[in-house]
Length: 253
Ligand code: 4H6
Image (cartoon, rainbow, N blue to C red; front, side, top):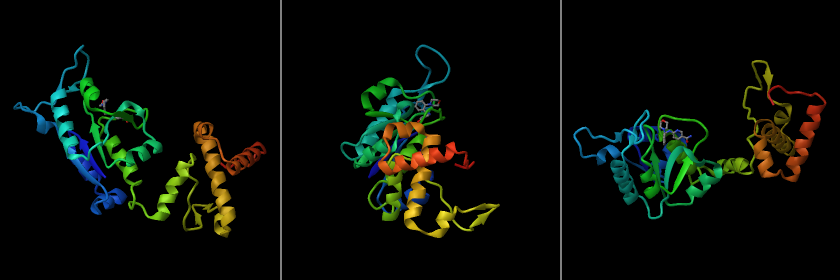
């Protein structure tokens, strides 16, 4: 997949992508990431990319001409049909589902805003989807663009080993992950749960599903309402709620 990022801080993108799973995917040529700097598309001595907002108020707006030219240059390098995505708090919520959708394309053009954002006419003429990482404000769209690149890259064939790809399915089933433990068996007075030490794989599978369901119930009840639990998950949630009713509390759950 070829990803182009339109950004006033190309180094921020390049630097961050040198590490870990995504860094390896780029080294192996499974993902290519290019950047396009709107400042390279200015023509005045000051290389001006921003201007005061019509209607007044604080802050500055990214001028349309350099942004549009930078997007056009990025699109010209990207594969045909690559969706143009603008990262902003006004966008549709990003999700694992959207990551899968974007991973199905051969390319992606990500547009990162700065200042108060991009002139709306550029969004109207050149952007296919406006996407938000969540209900919070950042000083630029680069970090969200990096998050989208990471989430999409790990879905591409060959980027994760087979064993790891199936772990991603544990979110695709709509639940939060279960807790993880490694050695030592005792750490600061806390033991690894006995069921994990005993090594009965059927028991371990049920325990993990129950932990995942209980955690999701406590932390993200919206996910349970939306997803509708499977039969086994429903049974395990009832077991958990029953135990909770009888006062067997586990503070970390
Ligand atoms: C577009 C428009 C994404 C991008 C305005 C971007 C949060 C998210 C940005 C801005 C972002 C998100 C610039 C407005 C700085 C505030 C960059 N913030 N901002 N939730 N900021 O995905 O001032």
